[in-house]
Image 1: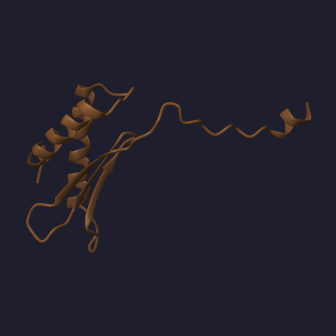
Image 2 (image 1 turned 180 degrees about the vertical axis):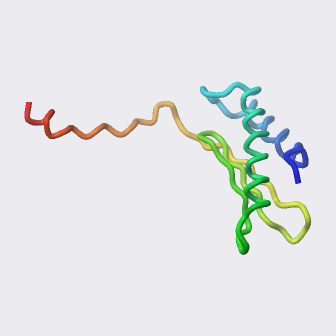
Image 3 (image 1 turned 90 degrees about the horizontal axis):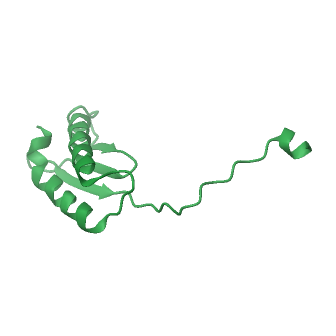
Length: 102
């Protein structure tokens, strides 16, 4: 099994990316390269999974790819965009004891 077998899923995800996803970190070309790389990793994880496990998963900050075992020869492929906001507040660092004493 190779990432090339999932070209239709990658193409569909890229259409969605270009139409709906605003991503500060990746251009559409970078997204495509990332999808191919993650798909290759998901295939490796799927093929090398422990007995009894049904999934191969690969992800980065923006994308999650899951290959799930089916009754057929080819696994089911799911590509998710991990949505987040650049306006999401990061947790405020706790003050250190030294800073509090001053």
